[in-house]
Length: 190
Image (tube, rainbow, N blue to C red; front, side, top):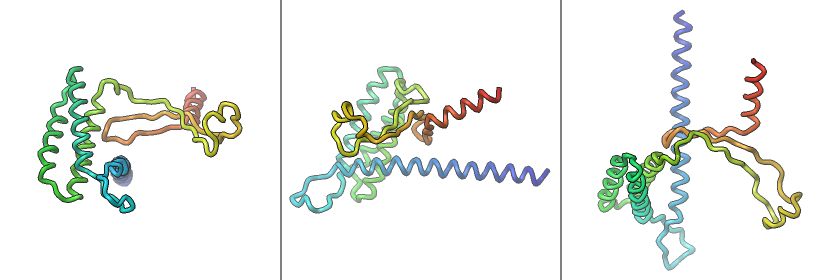
């Protein structure tokens, strides 16, 4: 009995570790995407051939302003936005004292996470699944060719369901084949 209990405990601990790793991976993927986006926020220089550093301050101000506008809209709908608005105020007050690029980057990510939490409070996002089509994009011909010559498009793609579980959790994407296989398995089991 002790051996079985130990095995169950080890399984639970390894499942928790895997969940933590998945959450860290999801967070890392989101932040990597945000950092790619902030690369477009650059201050022009006289030498465009030189790699320019992202303008975190400009991006932080932009997302604080967008967050405030979203908070006003959500408050009109009866949503409590006080925690997020407080986060935006704190970030704005910290911004004047932040000089290093690493500190600006950390503050930028903090503002983006606050904005994401606020966006997920929107009652229009009160669903847990989205059905979408995943298609290959065309390779060589303009879009009009696909209407008249469909053989030039790359075959394939999928019908998928994205299951969302909040701003902090990893979404799950399931392809239609996996969904229908699960439905067939349930139907044959009675």
